Image (tube, rainbow, N blue to C red; front, side, top):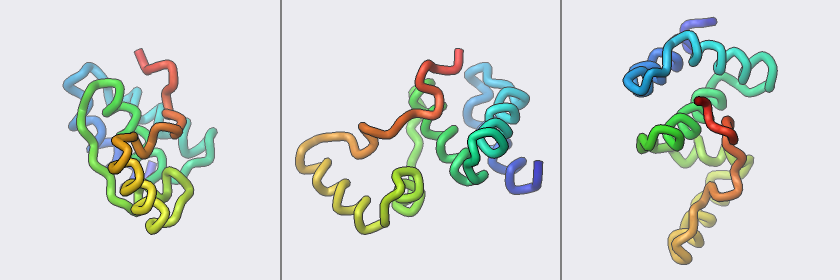
Length: 105
């Protein structure tokens, strides 16, 4: 793991370690995402944030650029979709496949 990946893992562990998630599990998930699934380290970090946040009820906030990358959209498309979702009280990420669809327990 390089320094950036370790920084991402440290951040995830700082938030989710209190739920019993150990650093080794986060490292394995991170390695799986980058080496087996072909995601960039930033994509894995954001997918883990979203998935772990959903699993443990933590509120995670994402920049428009991060959401655009996760959804394969431009930032303008994200902003437009967010406005439409807000008007209709819908979730922007409702169709996004979670990194751990069956949970991690």
